[in-house]
Length: 187
Image 1 (cartoon, rainbow, N blue to C red):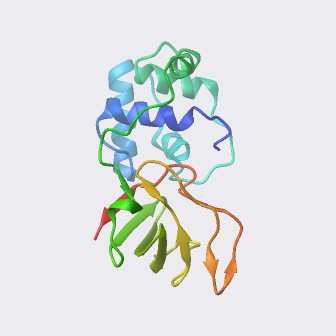
Image 2: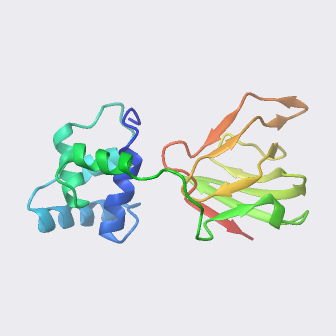
């Protein structure tokens, strides 16, 4: 579904207007009702679930669907929404604390990360930007895997140049490709 690069930004803009992250069936139903109430146009909860990746889909969203979401986010249509994105400077400093750098950790510190639909991984910091996987639920990372990461960013995918697994280095790995890390916490 991610053939439209601006889709993640559109989802974020919609959630910013809605003021609630959309992660449950009830949340999608409330968002559907809010869109209809606010702009007088309707999108079904099932359509929204597909757009957010809550329900797997291989189809490309219709332009009319993207236009409705764009209007809800405060733009004339999807074309205007995209133009506003491209007009912004895409470089910035991260002002909030939705990230953890390896430099601020001490060996033995633990981090929990997660991403949709139900991935949860607990890492132990080893030092020198290296982590060991302590627990892994529903993820391709496995217990005892070792990875090298200098910064973990909530809302952004986790990119690992390779996983050291049983003495062998895997190809590069990306976690949370569609939605980024949705859980990032020190334990």
